[in-house]
Length: 330
Image (cartoon, rainbow, N blue to C red):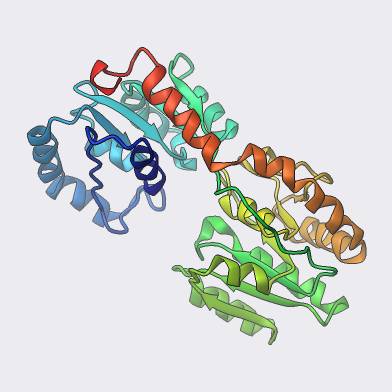
């Protein structure tokens, strides 16, 4: 949402008001059967609906299927843009049919990867006005030197099931038998933290460090020599772009939108989300440190593709150049 706000503020337009409604940590993406979520939808949706009626917004920006359920009575009154991941449950019966009728009524959908666009087309094949706008980061003016070798492996992720951090710990257990000088650094917090701490303790590994949530991006990437992304599914993966901007090599799961960023052997290594595959790929880069320079040289072209300025340009074209946009926004 902050990117959208930055985009409109960047236009220096005083005709546009940006309003962000916060719904705490309730998310249908995480748990479709969350009772608190449905209590919220039943109890507080009317408050949100009344506010929307009072303000008579021209453009509504929805970020998740939860928002679509809340906004279902307004999908045809204002231009509504859906910009988010399509969660795994939406792609299977019966949820595919529950959400489908609402997605069909949206004016526009913006997907963060080709992977997500394909999922949208799978749910609603005839849907028009479906675009891809990749996530991006600020252009990098200067970059630190890449690491000469791999000693500190890092994971930067929410400690939730879909991020599959347990796979990183199990992989590290195998690697540490041969490379006892390695350390594993976990940056992030979440509901799986205690479970993951117990897993590391059960394996008797003292060189696994839980740093919690860390805001200092520079501090994170100055600590590690290799980023590992073991996710079960990723719509995109902004942390990969962040690592590349800091000249840190990456080994990531070959899932979701990740292969749209990493070309295996060109700017990183892809692994199947299992211990054997990750061990093979991480070992490859440990024993062949010359790969690090090969990858980091190719980051320049990758970062140009995922530049935040390009994201703003693409959003501008979609918001202002398309015929479906209301005249008041031109």
